[in-house]
Length: 153
Image 1 (cartoon, rainbow, N blue to C red):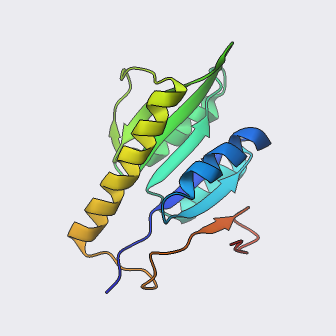
Image 2 (image 1 turned 180 degrees about the horizontal axis):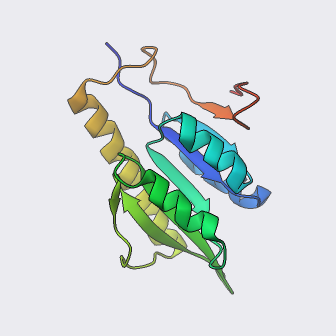
């Protein structure tokens, strides 16, 4: 029986941000899905389970908060990026489905460490639970939208 490969959803309209996050995530065996709108994100989280969701946060946009509400109580970790003058801050909203609003915002370097820690925790939880996938822990898939269903290696 294999170990479940973590499933990650990237929600960003910024190609540079998507490229950076995808490159970082490729260090871990994981299945990466990406979308650029809240409508696509809703379709993903309504029909699929994700271990980690990384999303842009726009303070005036209610869809950012509704995403957190729809994932609460699941096993998903949700982290928002919030643009600031010198880059972005990373704001944890859920950790394994539990609210962690009020946690300290993270700078880029802190977020990288947090990301690696979360992926390691997901891997350990999966191993302890005896999760399974296709038996392979060496690859990852990048899916562009919930309607395409195509994989890129």
